[in-house]
Every structure is written in C-alpha cells, then in structure tokens.
Length: 280
Ligand SMILES: [Zn+2]
Image 1 (spheres, helix red, strand yellow):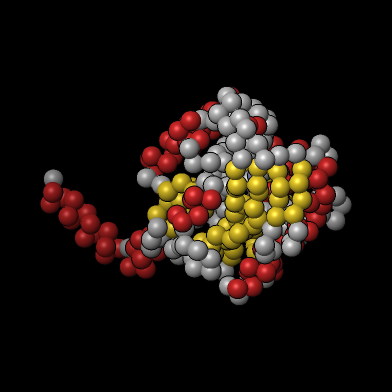
Image 2 (tube, helix red, strand yellow):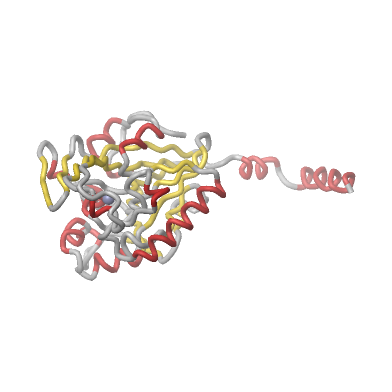
C-alpha cells in the first residue's frame, strides 16, 4: 500500500507542472491594519445586557476599523464614527462619541487613499460603523442583504444618509448577499453571517499567513466577557438569532483555533499590532 502511494506521488509530480504545486501551497499574502475609528463613553452600560448584567456601570468602548490588503486590492472593514466629530464630541442617549483622526487621514500614513479601497465591508448599519462610509463612495459596498434592505427601505434615516452614495438612481456599486461572502474569491477573507444585533449583522474571518485565522466580531460581542456571560443588548433586533450566532461563531473559533478580536473592547487592542504596524 505504501509503495502504491509513493508511486502515485511520483507520477503526479511528473505530470503536474511544479508551478501548480507552488500556487496551491502558498497561502494568499494578506496583511491587516487596525485603525482607530473613534471612542464611545457609556454613561450607563445597562442596555448592553437584557439580563441586567451591567446596570448603572460606566464604561469606555473603542471603535475600530480594519484595512486588509490582498494583491492589488484592499478591503476596509467598517467605517467608524462620523468625521464631523473630529476635534469635538456629541452625546446621544447613553453614548458620548469622539474622534481623534479620520480614516482617510490614517490611510495616508500607510500610503493609501480612498481610491485604493476596492471594497467597503460593513458589519451592520449602526452609526458607529458607517460614519465615514461616504469618503469611500467609489468603493464597492459589501453588506448582508437583510441589512442593506433596512437601509434602502429608509427605515433608518441616519443610515440612509450615511450610505446615500450607494442608494438611488446614480448609486455606486453594491454587492449584497444573503449568507457568507468570500471577499477576494480565494478564501482568505470571509464575511460571516451572524444575525441578531441587526437582521443582517456580519462578522469577519481573516486568514493571515503568519498570525493565523482572526475573527473580527463586528458587534456580535461588545466586551470580551460577553463571550462567557452571553450578554445580549436590549437593542438587538433578535435575541434568538443572537444566541444562535454566538454558537456558530464559537464553533468556527474552536474548529480553526482562531484569535477573536472584539472590535469595541479596548482590552483587545493589544491583540493586534499598533498602527501603523500591520499583522501578517
Ligand atoms: Zn458598534
């Protein structure tokens, strides 16, 4: 049996050009930067758990965005808080939002401009993830169909305003999808359907060649301890979907031995290199 296998390998090596083996063996050479896309101070964290896990607690959340490079194409994952917050702050309900630098400003540090961003991928339509989207009006918008339909249907006025470049007659390119989506077509970066926070909420799986698989949560979790305590915000659109997404997300995490990065948790910043350093 062993000899047959060995002969088979020799035969395969003779008939298949070495270049084919080379292409199959080499994982896509991708690179990822984390950008600072604002800060959210919570006067009361209570609404982040319908099980009363956080009543009366104050808290500070970071708002992060990510740039992923694959060949000559770039994905921007989430678009942070509005650029109008630069140098000021705004308070609404429990949130006080502020912004130190815009995404475009930070991209300049690594020699990029909006024209380089092929795809703008959005985890969901909330203000703190779409604030600077219109700076990338020339990019193809990637968004789960159930979230895009909420925005296109006008049910959320501020989301419709922020994503106006992709709505209406002269709209920019939109690629919407009903489930998971392979961003670059090579399996290196996959948008994962994780509904519950919003109807079409998504997380992101990034398979880095050296770091290994990284799972960016979107807002499936807001704080790291929610992975354990399964806290569900009162403002999620569907509690049962959220719990089902928790289960699938952790199944993927265990199967791939991935690293989870909770996008809003300041404690997770150190899991990736500090900008302008990148993770490979
Ligand atoms: Zn958020």
